[in-house]
Amino acid sequence: MKTSLLWSSRLLRLFRLKAEIDRFLVLSVCFSLFLLAVRIFSTHSLLSASLAWNLFLAWFPYGLSSWLYRHTALLKGKWVYAVLFLVWLLFIPNSFYIITDLFHLHDARNAPLWYDLLLIFSFAWNGLLMGILSIRSMEKVTQVFLPFRYDWTFLYPVMLLNALGVFIGRYLRYNSWDVVVSPVSLTADMLRLLLHPALHKQEWAMVLSYSLFMTMLYVTIKKISRLIW
Image 1 (tube, rainbow, N blue to C red):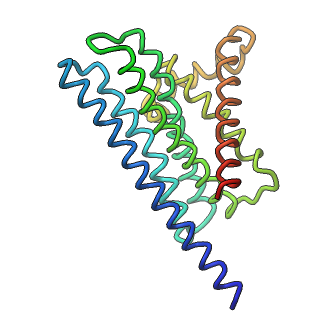
Image 2: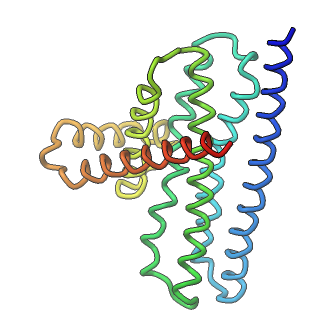
Image 3: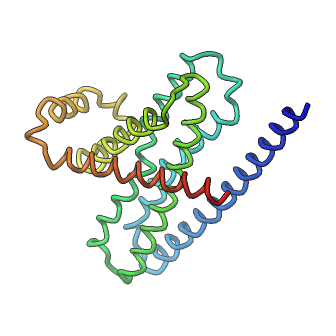
C-alpha cells in the first residue's frame, strides 16, 4: 500500500513537472516568435522566417517522444516501438540543427547585429531544450523495451547519429524526409563519407566534436536537474 502511494506521488510530481516544462517552452517559443515578427515587420524582409520552420521541425521529435512517454502502455510490441523510434531518430537532428543557423549572422542586414544574434540564439535555445527533453523521454521509453545497464550505451550512439544528421542537413543540404524522397543520392553521399574517412577529415571532425558537445550538454543538464530537484 505504501509503495503504491509512493509511486503515485512520484508520478503526480513528474507530470506536474512535465506540465510546468511545457508551459515554459510555450512561453519561450512565443518570445522567439515575437522577436521574429518584430524583425519581419520592421525590416519588411522574410530573411529569417525559416527559423520558424526549423523550430517546428525541432518540435516534431519532441512531440513524438512526449506522446510515447505518456502512452507507453499503448505500444503493442517492440516492432511498433522500433518503427516509431526510427522516425524519431530521423527527425531529432532538427532540434540541434538550429545551432548552425548562427552561421547566418554574417548575412544580417537591415537589423542590428545584436538583435539577430538574440533572435537566432533564442530559436537555437528552444531547439536545444526540445532536443534534450526529447532524448530524455526516449531514453526512458527505450528502457521499457530494451533495458540497458549504462546510460551512455543509449546516449552516445544517438548523439553521434544526431551530429551526423546536423552535418548532412547543413552541408549536404538533405532533409529528414529525403530518406524516402532521395534515398539513392543520400545513400551515395553517406557511403562516400563512411568508406573514405581519410578524405573527409574535417567532416568527421565536425561530427565527432558536435556529438561530444551535445553529449556533455545533455549530461550536464541531467546532473544539474538531479542536484537541484
